[in-house]
Image 1 (cartoon, rainbow over the protein chains, first blue to last red):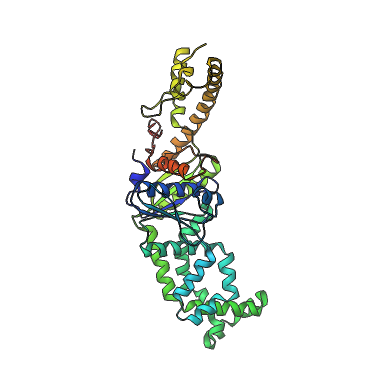
Image 2: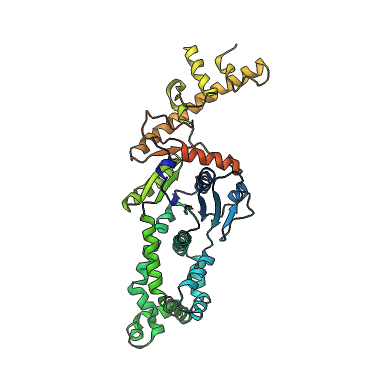
Amino acid sequence: MSSLRERAQDARIIITCGPGGIGKTTSAAAIGLSLATTTAQRVLVLTVDPARRLATALNLEGIGNEISSVDLPDALGTLSVAMLDTKASWDALIRRHADSEANAEAILSNTLYRNITERFIQSHDYIAMERLYELVETGEFDVIVVDTPPTRNALDFLDAPSRMADFFSSRLLRWLIAPARGGVAALAAKPFTMVADRILGGAFIGDMSEFFMLLATMYEGFVERARAVEALLTLPTTCFVVVSTLEATPLTEAQFFCEELTKRHLQLVGWLVNRVLPLSLAASSFELDERAPRGITGTAKHRRRGDA
Amino acid sequence: MSGPLEESPALQNIGDAATRERISSILEVNLEAWSTVARRERRALDQLATGGVPITTVASRDGLVNDVADLVILGQLIMDTPSVLKSNDVSATPS
């Protein structure tokens, strides 16, 4: 059978997905490092997991939103790493799409905006995909290895661009911005805003309305971008690797994710099963594959045969 | 007692004959235990393989990967180990 390197040889984006706590971030870093050391490619590992141990292993003081280079003296290529900082990435996105500096500043200082970008996990999902797209567009990297959130959030991660585009086209957004627009729209939305006022408070509704009004000025840029990010996932050069162990719970989660990738017609290039004993140990009487390394297990076969 | 396990290249330079024999007997017991676990894992892999997606297996565990050199080795195993798809394919053993 072929190796992962062969199956992913044309990949420009390699996305590792799977349950939490099974070595996904380490695997993503190892894949990136392997590509950087053995091929003349500029490789970036983009992680959502602020794993301190990974930074230490790569001789970095820390991994942040800014891209850091890993010192690899004998490598054929280069390796860089970055961790996603949701807030910083959202701010950059707003500045890019806002139609004026004043609107950008108004959004950035809006209370609701700060709450959404700092607290909502789904905002994290979208911005991760957005950052990926931005990095691909720069052309600075030949391969980007993405370490995704644990499986149960990873589906949100994949669906985030589509949800963002849908939201901007939705009726809900029209209701949300109605109070700020005034006129007939505000009148039509009055029953909604009256109920919302009672539940959430006038100040909140005001903030929310202003926020979505400003956001709506970026409609075209956002939708276009979200659709482009979504399309990026379906390219033949975007490959998915599902990482798991053989323990029941993570395996079930990973299998579910595998099915979801297939349903979405995304390119799954393989399973990476971690923490597995060498398969040669499972063979009866310790029979070994000819290519297996010689050593203690190899002599065990003779010992058992000798005993028989 | 002098068995083939004690003659393993991995043991040849360790201590005296008595030490090697002791290590050898410990390893023998452990090999049986590992073999049982490995067979169970193999059955799970077989089950997984029915989905038709190539599987790469690695033995990385917590605490084994601590620096760039460790990551390079792990990366090579992940990228270059032949995948396994069915029970009688033992090629997933790193070569």
